[in-house]
Image (cartoon, one colour):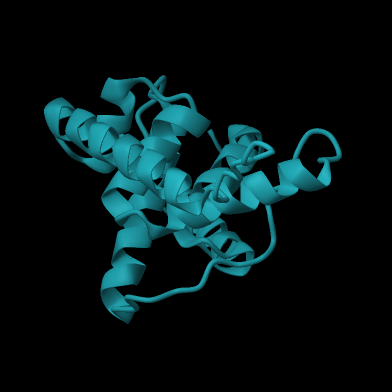
Length: 167
């Protein structure tokens, strides 16, 4: 099990960044998750879903840290996640806008969206990771998607209308 942990780090980093909005906090959360996983390795079921187990540990660690700090307002870090190819300036701005809109969502909706859309978990896996019934997950997804759509349309630059020549 421990030898398979490095294969999961990239996904854990993406999820941690989506949860925390800060590269530094995300790295701390990943380290905390891996430390907890190593400490609890004996409780991992042989043949179990390692990825789901790790994401559950991370989600629970994140919730615990939020409750401990009671930090309601956190700013989104300007650092963007690493992309597979060099982005154009417009792409970079769009990614920044999506991350900013995602960060404004309630944590429950943000976590559900990231697990399904970014980490490609099935609905049932994501529900298990978050510790909620499947219907609750689907409700959070629907509300999160709609809120993200609204946020992105509010952030869109106003459309310019060209007025015809009045000769």
